[in-house]
Length: 510
Image (cartoon, rainbow, N blue to C red):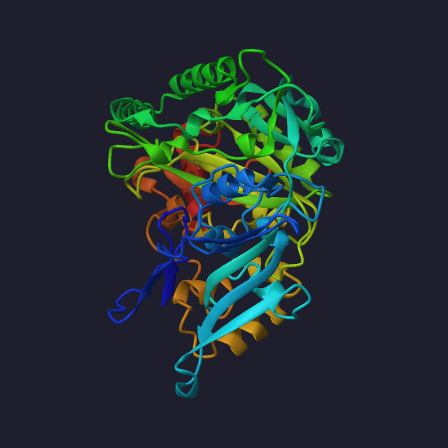
């Protein structure tokens, strides 16, 4: 059995039944969509798990209350975002993740025949099991109802400041302590960073700013298709100059339009009520001919997201290593600029057993993905090396709702309380009815995360060890990383300084 929502936001197989499972069940929370109660005096809201973040923000706002830290995209259900540990950006308050604000939670778990095969558990703060259920990956049962602690509505003042990235490594360690809602938007190939200077201000401060982020607005489907076709042409012709030019134009347009933020034409700082600026997603209201840019029902953008958190004690080294890669090939990461960035958000240490283990910086990296799994991307090796740098050199933790297989290899061993989580799992669902082969692999209960076959490294199913894991017929061989020598990445022979014979020798001997 698997729990699904009205949205399809996760990249891994968290909600997929096992292959060949003809008797499996999908339990939808589509109609668990009610706001149960709002307690204005005690500043709490109780909702069913299928309620969307957008609903929660709207209804709480009508009562003069707000959830302080949330994801930026409101097209998520409360059950889904809690189950995967979704978060906003802050090192302040009780924590940056929505699950940090759970006061009470109701979960339905399997039971024996004497209990009609289902048991309802109500967990409150202080319950020994709540820290397992806060981030459950859906393997403990069905979260049906959640009560969250809120705050009185407040205003924020936001300024987007463009700077070069020369001090980013050092600033990343300290900036989040200086500004409550700080984040970065990094364009590594352009050597630019957008610093988000974002703080609470007095409720009397003038301003009624609105966040309607351009990337989350309804977009004409023919424009989306045109952008997709252009990118496919640039990829198929290895046109790095074209991709960099396209990226520069895209980021320039976003900047000129203040990324979709408005403030009655008064410019920065943009001051507005928290519930008007904390999240957006108006493409969910798509009308005929316009939709979300990634809508699979049209020829939408087709991309992948690698998302992870790195401890603040290590983050400077990772940023500087990425900068070293860019110095080796300035055009290599233009594909990231094209998708508007590496988004960097602050995340606090969590009490959840599968939550963040330290105060960290979250990196959300979006890039082109081919419809053909055997087709390498332009500068494939730089993208793979960045990924391996994060997870294996700097010990990054993966976002549970994103990433490719290799991000989860050995990941569970980075969580100090995983044994406690597995004990709760055994107690709540000893038959594994809500588990699958995929979740058992992620939790370290089964092998098989690495799927070794022809071309497997191109899709992140494995780390290459032989040429066949790449695309030798297209000139891509398995070689060490350029700066992280322990990495093994698929490298285009025509874009490397190593002679072809040496590449073939290295690839076939690994």
